Image 1 (cartoon, one colour):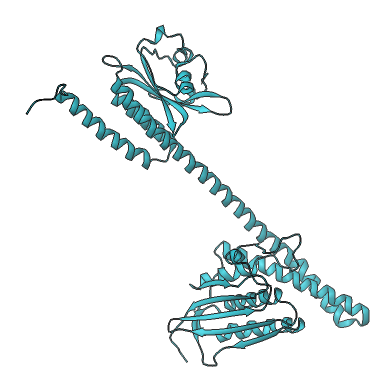
Image 2 (cartoon, one colour):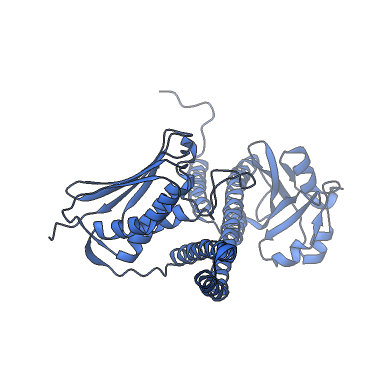
Length: 421
């Protein structure tokens, strides 16, 4: 067997294997670190160690100012560095960034592009420099530099090694920035949600007292007046009752959001809250000329639940069906059973729900109709409250509809207890 024409020395093979192992470790570390400051420090310390240099630094591009800025460097205060802008013209880093190619300067003092202001301010004298672009795909985002090799000059192997590190670093920095942006967006959403919850809590609390007074006086006037005055009092009373329902929706939704909806759980027949909700809502359906039917077994069907909360759940579903069903429409409640679950269906012949809106209707304040042209009232909280009440009872809820003017079926599934009756 003949030997290769240009055999590679064992020392170089060992060095390459060691560097490859280190690059793999760098990749693992970069992809598991999301703190930008720790990430930058790790990159420059690793680059300086692998290339056997005195220092390393990272400059990132500031799109607003059109300049490069140091973000970190070994042995230097990053806050001090950040105050030193590096121009794209008239600097080695700027040339690397603009031309998207590595540069090796083995005698910095003789290169007219050397931007000496940095070294003067941080009291560091660069003698030789290797700079490579940091890229994400074809876009250059910054420059990674290695300075003052301890032994010899920078080689092609050094250029290749630093280029690989720069590519890994660019992706890792971009990922960390994206995570930070997502966290910032999440914090902002959380802040807005808290403001909304606080507003609902304060508004519902402040409205209760004057609303109670209005209801009291309206009831008194209705009972003690006649003719046209009684009709006016009845209008005030009806409007006040509607406002009270809205306030109750706000209160219930807020309790569910902040996790304060305490449950008084007992084994109870599902007929109890359904019948109570039916009795409460039936007069409203009658006023609209709607046919409201109840199909439920007389044999007790037990669940573990809070009777008051379950009554609110079914009242909200019935109110929603009545609101979106025209006069003379039909609404039915039916209970189906399996050995482990109870399925309650509230079906109407109303305006229906488009297929792409079936999940959205359970969102808070959501209205299928445009808010400027909608014909049906409400805050859009009824189904959101219903979903919250179902969830705290370890159940499921969803809507089914064949589309516009095809009616809607709201389906609630609750865990069933073994029959106790």
